[in-house]
Figure 1: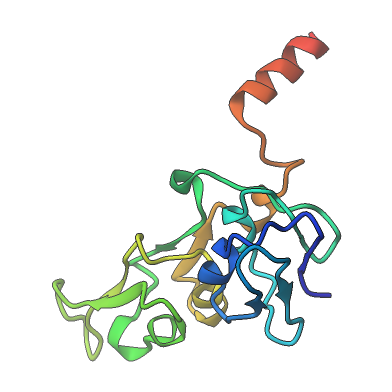
Figure 2 (figure 1 turned 120 degrees about the horizontal axis):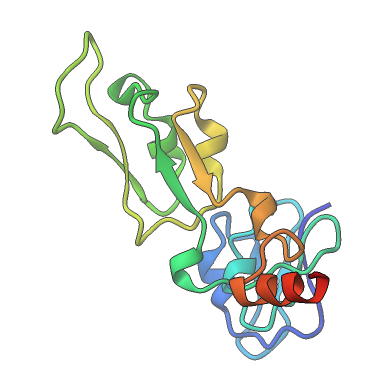
Length: 163
């Protein structure tokens, strides 16, 4: 089951700009829809939705996050073979990854993938494409769900109520 937009959508278009597969369509100020054939269930749309009207595949509402907390790709340089692969670079629809060749060449391989954070949507396409566990998205998908990720003030309130 793909993600779904519910009727509280205000048609702001934030999700359409963030979607890496162009699965979301709709006119400004009207309810948008997600094409289940194109949706990859990445959650990139949910982190930018100001009215939190997008449901994940389990029916949970996706939470909006401040930009500084948006998911982003992290490269583990020791695992990246760079010029011998570049799968993550080629799959990224936002050109958020480039080959950084400023380091030393090791054997036939040189360079490592480098993230241009400003462009990264955290869609996980690069993470899924990498066969060397050289790139991952932080925070993990599970942390984006409301019940696992709570602002500090909510956690402190809960601790006070228990104690």
